[in-house]
Length: 233
Ligand code: ADP
Ligand code: MG
Image 1 (tube, rainbow, N blue to C red):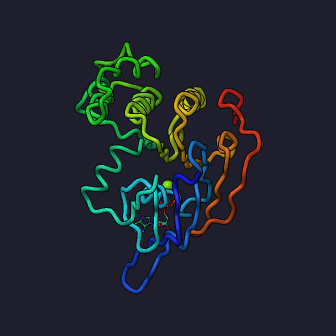
Image 2: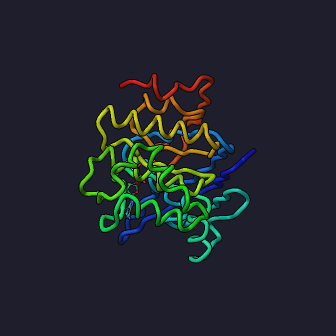
């Protein structure tokens, strides 16, 4: 079943006479509960696509439908509700709120759902329960990303969007985050879209979408996704 439908999506940046097509007619169908890797050279439009699917940025034309709702037709309030209810985000540089503790960061997300009672469970899952009163800047990058993951998934969003989630981490911490993502997928089956530069990580996905110059150049099914444990680079 299609969970995300992208049709003829464009994003055009203009500066003076120059027109830059960050997305140049992207069409894609993402099935519910599958893991997608988005790969492509720097500047190929990966983050732009991610931001429009996530309701963070606006398209110039075309359509994005997620779970039957047309994201590209939403107003500001509708986008806020959409992001809150449907999407969990994981970014390369964690994007935690530095003035809140670990616990409070996850609580801020949980408060928007009815899972406030489960904050410690999620912190335990990501191995951060003992650091619940620390502030993000007192943590390593790997620890911050694990908190960000707890924050992203505590509301059990049907769509998890990750933009280079391991891009700033060393090998061990990257593996740990990938294993946690895999566990989340096993536990409740969200659709996961993960931008990565790392082709080894892309082998974890059910499908690999390649972008170049704002266009989809291929969508390849991976008949046997590699478990996070076995991914090496
Ligand atoms: P990727 O994530 O694949 O590296 P991006 O989606 O970030 O690529 O960018 C795609 C293209 O759009 C690039 O050429 C980039 O320079 C351009 N771009 C992205 N954001 C902006 C912006 N706010 N203003 C102008 N150009 C932008
Ligand atoms: Mg990017």
